[in-house]
Length: 318
Image (cartoon, rainbow, N blue to C red; front, side, top):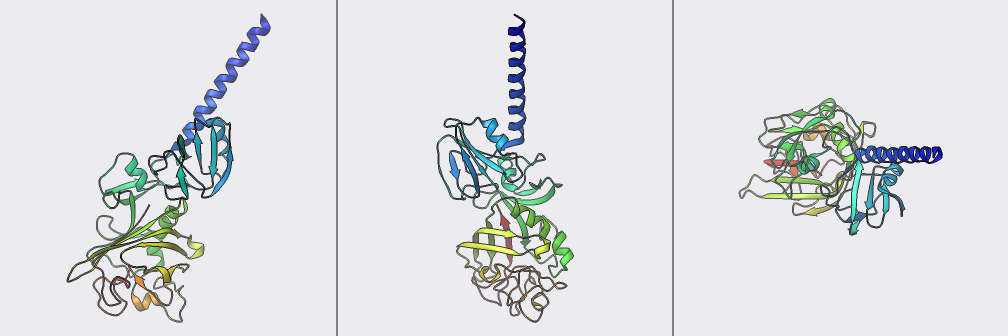
């Protein structure tokens, strides 16, 4: 009888411990399938491993390593698949009934405007987001109206009220007014493009006549850290504005006081902006508002030419 009681106590304790561990692990991982268009889907991008016949809590436990960032788990087949990055619905995915997507929670709040939108906020405006690295939150402008919403805006030009001919320190830390014109911060852009695979959208309006609205999309958009001089990785163009970023892929950021371009003079000083200059540019979205001098304005050369300065620009990612 004593043995049976001891066995019962041990079994009860073991079950309680398992329940506690499972609950703790599930609190550490957040379901993000609906938010990222991954309900009943599974992806192969940055896959680390696949195991079968494993409980969900064991799946989460396997993903506690620093390398693992997210998992797919199927309650019906008990299949677990780990990934080294956060994913979205365009990352080499296919349908798989019953699969759910989970990622490590940042623990503080939404990490971008897409997650703000998933929390029920559907109005374009200013919100606070929290990077996946656990650092302090910061304010951003979220575009909830364009192409499904959930876009994190990091650059905006609307009226020339803010000077964009700035120093390296200014572009590093950000400047302007989130309600009108601004540059978010190179450090923040790096954080946002490092925590997951991101798409860039550029919305543009020409001065006319006639006034013309256009856009460009890039399926790959990533900005490095300051050690890399915020090097740009961009590709996968689609849209109707033309690809004016192709020349800038792989380039470092330059400002009037830090020249990282590939010519013998300063493109930033010549064309009055801060940008990923090359020899020197095909686009110059941080140039002088309203300038009609060659290359100095807010230029997207494939949409117009080097003399036509855009009257409106928004650069945004998700």
